[in-house]
Amino acid sequence: MVAACTCQRDKRNFEPYPMHGFANPARFLRLAKWLTPLLLVSGMVVTLAALAWGYTTAPPDRLMGDSVKILFIHLPVAWLGMGGWTAIAIASLVELVWRHPLASIAARAAAVPGAVFAFLCLATGSIWGRPTWGTWWVWDGRLTSMLVLLFLYLGYIALSSALAREGSSSRIAAIFGLVGAINVPIINRSVVWWNSLHQPPSITMGKSMIDPVYLYPVLVSLLGFSLLFGAVVLMRMRTILADMQAEARLRRKAMQAAEGV
Amino acid sequence: MREQFDMMAFVNAVYALTFLCVTALLVWSWLGMRKSEKKREEAREK
Image (cartoon, each protein chain N blue to C red):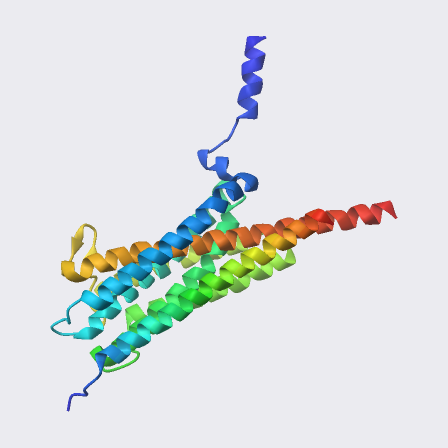
């Protein structure tokens, strides 16, 4: 009798992987409802504070002059542009291997902010290049691979939206997300592998070549933009989930009405 | 001859562009979420 009770309890609480605890959309929505405004407000405060700090207090650089203030935006958006695709790749892997129900939604949700940050990285880098390199654009490894990342984002958004509209499986988008991840290490190592106008990596694991007077505002700015990125991902996940639930409900009601006739 | 640039004009352009893009992204995401969640509630009530 005791053994039977234990067995039933185990079956009821059985979750094959710890992450499946968050697979329940209702549980996710409860978490997202208070986390979204928290990330949004803290992200806005931290980002504005970091940018104001860097803009007003950073001294001109010996070589780049006042244009060094662009660093406080360019570096965080570049990292988040790559981080967005890394998130898509991880979510795609989770979807393909563990079939987590929220993984495809998370991957789709990370695509739009990732594309916006990749675009901002290219645009701010181009504006920075004009006074420091004397040109808006060069077809070198870093800039070209970043442009490829922007096109990958646009392709992913188009593909995943088309699959969702057709009601098809999101596995093709997940495979695309995983294959596209090959571009992230290429972007990262491009300035080491090929000759480039772009400077070598300023920050590597545990080491920084940036003076602390610039480094600290950059790190705070990275934190602020990351919080905003997280807020947008949560808002996009809630949007996609709400659209799916509304559509499923309307379809069910239409079927019930048709059966009634 | 080396070109002379007003560096702060480029800095201001970057800050303005980033502010516009990030604000547009946040407003679009927030309004889209509100609209979709309202649509879900309406579907529940129908």
